[in-house]
Image (tube, rainbow, N blue to C red; front, side, top):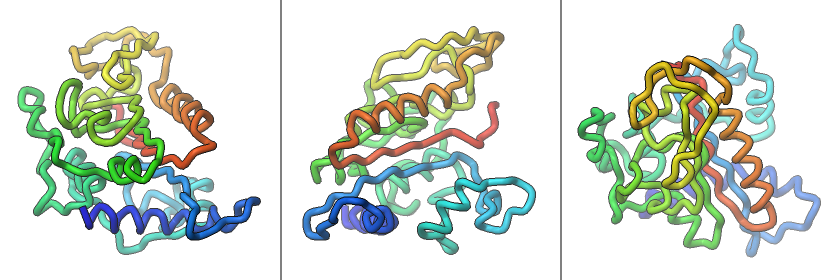
Length: 237
């Protein structure tokens, strides 16, 4: 729990600049800064201009780095998806976090968090924040103890499993525990949504970002924590 709190404090430090710029007076003793945590899937350290990239143009992210904090000695929790996300959400390193690897399809339950796990979302929710996860979760399926709604998130929209998230044009996304239909027509797709499309109409991340902006608009007058876990730039496998 203390690890999670220290991680929250570290991330809140990056919000200080936004508070200073606010047109309203900020009282340090009472202010609850809003936080958007953006996770890019498979983005390498050297893929951004602010870290030395000279071929790929990333002007918006470079500007964020120049106006905020740029970490130069910061590591992903693991080399693969699920355990790295477990480290990020629980604040525990790989020697202690529950999820140790990406599970195969027939053993996906071992990749889920459990009800006694505490996440960043729990900490923010306990502090009176509205909480949401838009994007990719990978730490618990529908009906499991690790589902986002059981892990401190009021709202979830996107992909629950990494297999589903490998498809940028699925026939559905997940809203909380319900399938949200898209207009794509699958060429091959299993019950989890993994596969590829024959007819590509709705690009998943356009839909996810629209929902994220809607959620921000609905909650902008209250303290909020948005975990925006985009699958980009991960390959559409």
